[in-house]
Length: 222
Image (cartoon, rainbow, N blue to C red; front, side):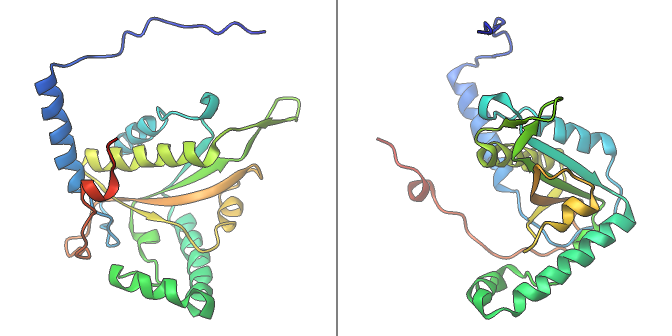
């Protein structure tokens, strides 16, 4: 049996209670400003900013510390066009089906439809893949634990880092995502999770008027 190794936990900083309250309030106030946008500028975003946001995502907790995620950062215009063409093809089918009519109606107040120009306009598409299992050097499969939960947490931290850096994002899940493996040459053990569109908002960006649930509606204290 392999004996686990431990190191002294020196990274933790404890703050006075009042400072903790202030920090939590300031962070909440900042994150409350975060909005999902669908209108992006083509302004250049410095690569180092994206790298740091991805490093932040990579610090997320994961089942057995497997870290079952892969981030593919797309800036190439030709590849972005391929992604848009394939995504819109699937969306046209999705929006025309009677079986998805109710979902389409639910989306109308958010201003979304089968047209996805942001996939070409935004400077960065971060395609997130979930590693369903690992592959050992000898070719054997390695079980991964809590993959969806782990990748979801990392994605949330990535979105938070993007907003904290001063950029905006859009979480986009094409109705059919298998084409992403082919376009981006990803192995079969990786399943597309979502596309995070990242950049600056366009000058004429508008967002739907929505409300978030109150604390009493989302939390129960026992």
